[in-house]
Length: 162
Image 1: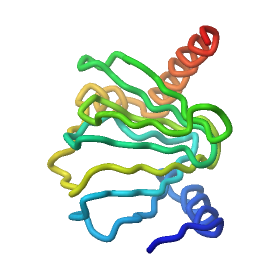
Image 2: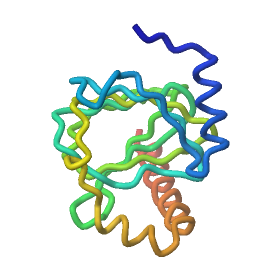
Image 3: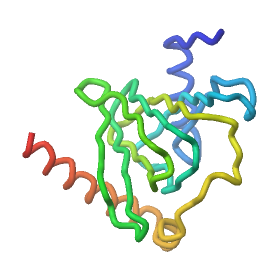
Image 4: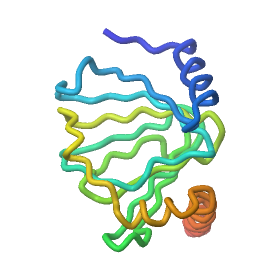
């Protein structure tokens, strides 16, 4: 049994703030071979999870604290859709087929989420988007700023529609 309390969340946030990558995680599963992989994570605004896909049947991301955007891409790298997850708003959880290109970014300081996906975890089954790596390797800060701006525009348009 694993029980997560506020002390775990505070440590996760502190670890992310002190990490060079500006993110941290806590594995809730026991081994990479477990059939269910559950990861509690914290991300800060200066980081993102690079575009990738994998061939599990399902992936679920829950926003427990803060705000984040889950981004889906076409094969050429153009953004297909953006789903904002917000612990204080309507969209708190997204479940999707992870064989689509996807990434996520932090929209608010100290964002904490829970990712649940089918195991076992096999690194060879994770495909990193070449077009994403090419763009971000030139200047990661510029790429993240452009991505956040574009994602913000998409979210604003969606809010205007609803």
